[in-house]
Image (cartoon, rainbow, N blue to C red; front, side):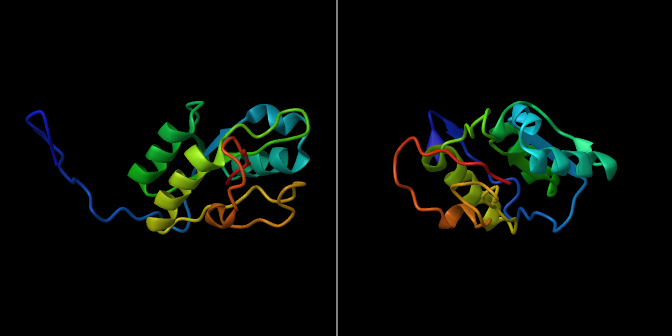
Amino acid sequence: MALKGKVWQVINNNIQIADEGNVFAPGNMKAAFDNQNYKDLIDLYIDRKYTLRYSGGMVPDVYHILVKGKGVFMSVGSEKSKAKLRLLYELAPIAFMIECCGGVSSTAGRSMEYPKAISMLDVQIEQYEQKAGVI
């Protein structure tokens, strides 16, 4: 694809995400204060000596996972710190890329909206600004 004399080049046409990795990128960390499951998950990664990757943004953290071929991004909500990422514009497109690379996307589970974790690609989009937690 040419754009004003510039050409896009594919530098890696076979990106794969490993089944396991040692990098985690937590988003919406405020939710850990009143969501014990989220706090326990963060503590588990710390106890297992995972490397913390935190940029404060989903796109750079997921890009890092794609480049390294391993890792976990998560952004979970809580009663006081609601989920911030929009399903239509942020979660579904990124989940599609992750799943195309052999990774897994999931609702955060154990919430009122999603008591059972399911693929982000199976979540029905009901409104433009619909938000959800993701792992």
